[in-house]
Length: 198
Length: 198
Image 1 (cartoon, rainbow over the protein chains, first blue to last red):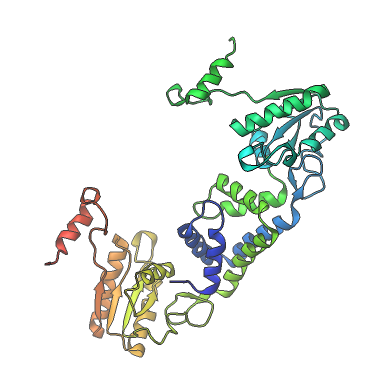
Image 2 (image 1 turned 60 degrees about the vertical axis):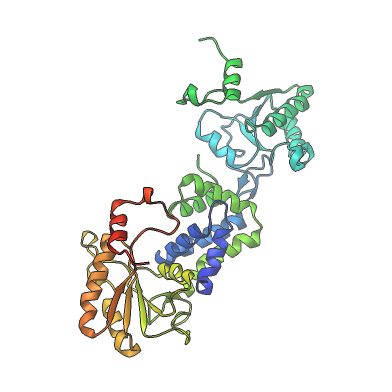
């Protein structure tokens, strides 16, 4: 059975979102039917307005509603260290650690020959352009600990070394609170190779 | 860290939906950032417009964009049998069986003393009013097979019996394709009590 047209239309739209199947879409649609009208409008407008207002920071390609993002315009941040991430959402994860006080650069992905993504499809040139202007001394390659992320980090280090910039990589090893029993052999291997004196 | 205001606002709104935590809300928000602008607008408008256009069918209280729902206005449906459900979304599940050709009545919940819901909070009077007008001969209590649903079905049968209407209940038993091993004892008990000669 199809639902009444406006309900069916919303279910169809919701089903297109990642991780939301038809059943969840139905449940969400009927939930929205039962909330206050103002709440439904808030949600709908939040979607439309976010898509309208948000663009990419002209400096680091983070998402922002201004010309530059909150981090790039924050004068308390250290301009000499840039943390390079694959996607804008990775910034939030790193910020939550409260360990990093520098700025970011969003590459827009990682090198993946299988998907046909080479360095030219990423914002490498834009990164190089920033180094001189901002007086960058260290670039942290915070790409994912995957084959693609590692390849991208390696590419970065080769690209930037001649420019007198230190390129570092996030440490790989056992997750805090984890159990040795459950660690895969590659992670454990890296934890061993990266062991430190205590 | 907070995201830029429009993004954060959408994440907050999405997190209020059932079954969507902060992590899923973030993932959805960033997904919406990356889709075509028109797609984001479609989704946002689908939410707003559904909430604006949809109301309750004046006859059966199903959701509809018209005065009466598609089922109530369908002259091929048998008006003498009414299937009583707790919520409007239950209608879709029953329709999918393609076994039922009558009409529906949405109670708006089930009798639950714990939650303070008695028969007066449900659309019982509205159901009784329909019986005469539509010439109803059978009412199928398709409330959930829970304590509340069973109580509601029992209440319905006592309410309608004096009015010369047959009240029936959906059969309880083993789900088709299920495994005896995994059936709980109450379901299995009902399946035994409701056994049929083959």
